[in-house]
Image (cartoon, rainbow, N blue to C red):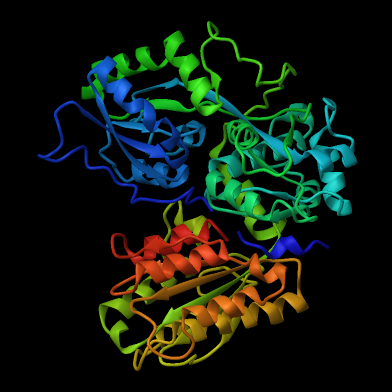
Length: 527
């Protein structure tokens, strides 16, 4: 089975993430400001913001977050004027949000589809074929002939919508998904071919580019706009053939949602501008998204193939059941190696913040996003604490995720027993982490693997950064595709940790400006 399954890279992060909590603007915010809780993929609209302000008089001030983190923020009473995500359907089903969303308007469209390397599409008979079904893709995945990348459905809307679309297509009975027709076996077959995961659509695209020449990665599931942008750029060594399964897809419609009714007049003016024909044409040209109004027709970059739109489930419990089944039964299991700094500087509040983060991951966080970010069935959790040397190496296998289970309690008790002292051997601990991954990979190659590094200081003993980089580059390619996600904390060097992320294909997270619990939860979306 394919080696890419263990490359890591719930409902929680997308691309990622600034704290998802707007404040509606403080005294220093201009009076013409509209605060917007927005999906990170909307950053590509920022070049239009000056024109928006000139034509409407309103300045947009976005706070970027994942779609479901944004939903959690709105449930918690976020004070932003507007919300703007790739989809609002899950959000509108949530208890506690219906009264917050005053109105919403679709601004642009992008279906979730499959991009396949041209050579792979030809090999599979999919190039130019408008009769490919999700079942065809699942059959090739199960056989080992097709391997693809997709974001984590519990953190990124593109993966979330893709999962719903595939599950609905497999449901039969008129393709309406309910609790009785989730076809777990068909979904397992389909996800056998997933070889790369990520927490956001942009991060997924970047990592696909990073590994595109590998023979065991054939394509990726993503927004049509992302796939078209990849084809239009210069980073691909061969183009992607876009496959639109004939049994149906789901489309992101990017609704602009009004949360603050006192800004209704501003909202109406903004919507009128964004949905005007000239601006719809400009959005299509700039972002590769389809227009949302019938007056503007999709141009030649979009295929003429008739797209069948599947029905989005109307029952929140069904959606949550599908997500939990995906995490606990369907997707390939993962191994996460936590490399934890317990040097002397971590004493007091700092080590307590790490313990609190693990308490949340072991069931303490019962929020919307917390229930998906917690440790799941079939996971292997490896904890490597370090100070002036590697202190320990403990492996915990999770079979029972119920509150107070021995599997969950063992992790919580171990982390609560950590005692800070001594120096900081960051790179020795990272090398140990990759040795653990190498050992486990030999025993079980069909997993996703990732490393999380948390430190509050700079390396002062053992291997230096160059020593780690040389070691990392000597690893087999399959292990070089295991990403490290460093957490910047305390007096840690951002430059050094950014270098670790860059070399390993990971991403840094900053616990100096957000709680350690939030950062750990965000990283879970990439695993």
